[in-house]
Amino acid sequence: MPEAANGTTMHGTTGQLTVAVIGAGGKMGLRVSANLQKSEHTVYYSENSPAGQERVRGFGREVTPTEEAVKDADVVILAVPDVVLGKVSEGVVPQLKPGAILLTLDPAAAYAGLLAKRDDVVQAVAHPCHPSVFLERTTKEEWADTFGGAGAPQNVVAAIDDDAPAGARERAEAVIRTMYAPVIDVHWVTVHQLAVLEPTLVETVACMIGTLLNEALHETVHTVGVPEEAAKAILFGHVQIALTNALRGSNPFSEACEIAIQYGRRTIIKDDWKKIFQDSELDSVIAQMLKLEKVEH
Image (tube, rainbow, N blue to C red; front, side):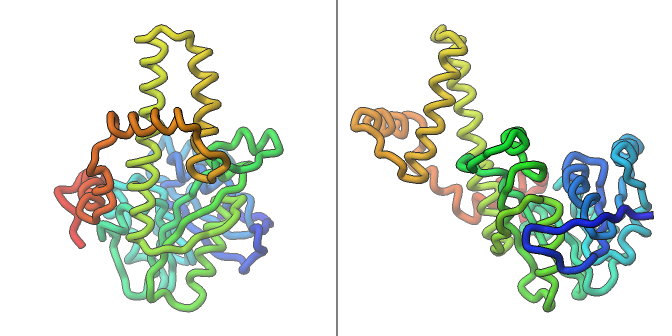
């Protein structure tokens, strides 16, 4: 039997939906299932691996065979690794009822055209933004939730077929708001725009800069010999200042700091770095992420 419970999203409800989570025992499957389990929706959890099935049952959820889970589902969530999304969708899509929504959690496979399609099945993608670095946290639960989906509010960016029938977007958003709750807003874009946001903006740039900061911290401590706690104290505080000054214009950088910033740009950043926003570069990195020879549009 499926799990069902009462609950509401931040903007109310759109009625009870039937939802299937495929890959419910994986990292993202467990994350999205946590909020769905507490919702008003009827939810089926499908997982193939024995270890994953044990994880699903460990949270009090019953494992349902995929063919049974998806046959009457209004929304089917594919919470499986990007590299197998195409293969999994080929097995799932033919079993869906007309008007069902196939919801994936990352835009790469949709952008690359790997997902199986049917004229009467809607495709949608929804990616969490994670709680903002500028979020005004007031509770321990909010401070503890750095990923989102637990205590701290977050935004979501999503895309859906241009020709989706009336009501499909509302049904998709109802499930999106539930599984990523608490959600501030769902920002709707195109699949191409979502792919520019993830990976280009946040992985190619932001996550890379995060790893660069970690390497710089290591060099400061282990090569230069600065005490680790002192290095962490000044770095963590100045990251906050750097982000709020650069992204929100809270305060201007000092003249001396601007000189150091320009030295850093000349020394670390390539002159042609903005090429990463070209579609050819996006195709290249997504092909590498999905282990493809090239992206076919």
